Length: 138
Image (cartoon, rainbow, N blue to C red; front, side):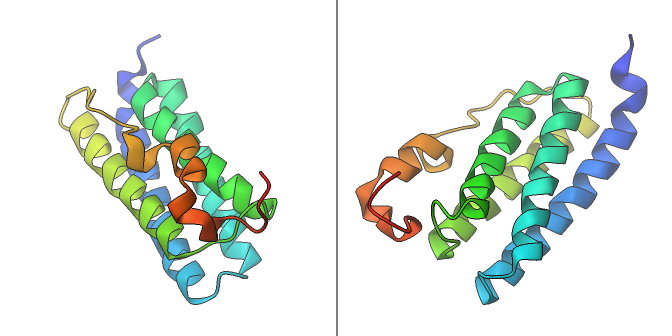
């Protein structure tokens, strides 16, 4: 099946989700207990992941999945929403924005997606970022 005919819809919807993500992040920086924003941010990342995977944009799907995992941890109270997490998510939004722009122009962006600063595992294991943790356990 030729998925290229859905590319415009993918670009448009992904951009809407990215705007929503940015707005939720700003809201959560002011009030980290805003459960609606936590849930919305998770859903935006989840939607981008699913759309990108169905279109074959695996790099976008992989990054959105990492962001979804971060927010799932916040939803489950494994760690709290804090400024370093907000910065990490905003960086993810910026990277997906660049990738979507490339998709729109006919490219297929294959740059380094999950460098150390965007890797969920390394971020959570980095002891210098302990404020993410609610407790000393994971």
